[in-house]
Amino acid sequence: MAKKLIATLSDTGMFLQEWFADPKRTGSVVPSSKRLATAMARWLPKDPNSFVLELGPGTGVVTDALIARGLREDKLVVIENNSKMAGLLRGRFPRAQVITGDAWHLDTLLRNRQIESVGAVISSLPLLNFSEDQAETLAQKIRAMLEPQGNWVQFTYRIHKMRPRGAANFRLHASKIVWLNLPPARVSVLQK
Image 1 (spheres, rainbow, N blue to C red):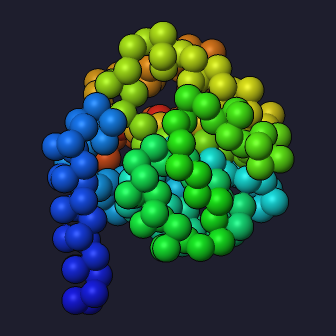
Image 2: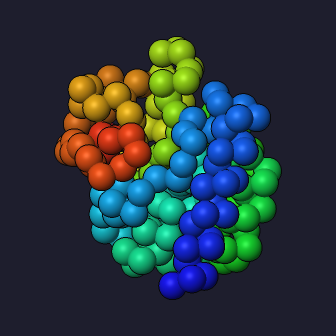
Image 3: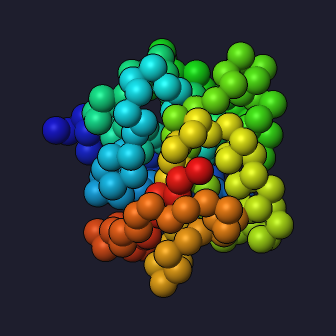
């Protein structure tokens, strides 16, 4: 119990430090809550051999929930732009493919690893920090990499909107507000 508390405090400290250094890149001052992580992790692909792409995992709260939900670690590909957080993730998830890079280059980053498609994209990227054109560019790349009927799971702090930026060419499959998160967040599940 004490180990978990120390890890949580350490992760929160890292988020605060990185947010102060670059708020547009980090997007939050604290890691996602376990409830938000669980709400996102329930949308894994039905095929256990499909890869899952996680964008902007931070310190790995959602990543933990994905593994706890049954995702094989070797089927997880993570793209984290922050090199400190990526290093932390490599230590915590040694069998996952942790890529330090820009999510807007996800197509190139995945193809460099011979991954042609993914069954789900689980995104904690702060899309509100980017223009609508940038979000649309990202959404097009996500759509191109998703398997048929694949899910793009995105959370946002703009809880009054059911669809995140860039989601116009996706079918809204589900949407839920997670009130027990700081701040409250909406999880939207979009299908190709």
